[in-house]
Image 1 (cartoon, rainbow, N blue to C red):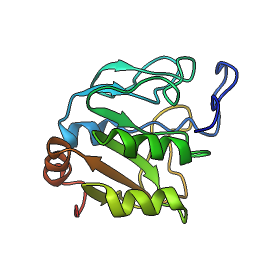
Image 2 (cartoon, rainbow, N blue to C red):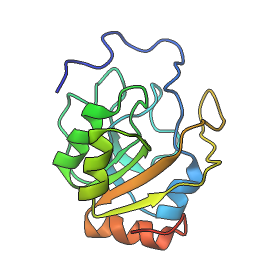
Image 3 (cartoon, helix red, strand yellow):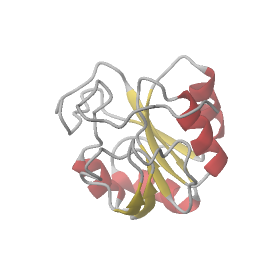
Image 4 (cartoon, helix red, strand yellow):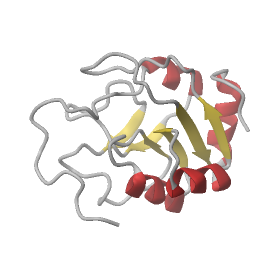
Length: 154
């Protein structure tokens, strides 16, 4: 795993500031113990008990319980591998022709492709031109994906 992803605290919005829309959390109906990659001001919509921001560095901090992860899309590699090691939670990531994506595809307990026109919240409040998927580990999270109605879950 690399050193700290962001060596300085976030003072302005970046190209990674695309936050998970509330309707996804509503559809999942899951309360998470930890959101590992929150906006600087804390969770916008994530139903969670604890969270890490860029300042508290969710990539290097310990993860516990059921986690939600929407990592910085500019550099998801280390985040994806840490999520796979943790094996308890739901993540939202971009489709990618990469080893980390292939490993998630092959090993996660469940996956669902998100709508092609997914609109994110936050500073940009819009779509990005990258297809995205959600992966889950843990029976509770797998059931939530299946029941969410977001899409066909495998």
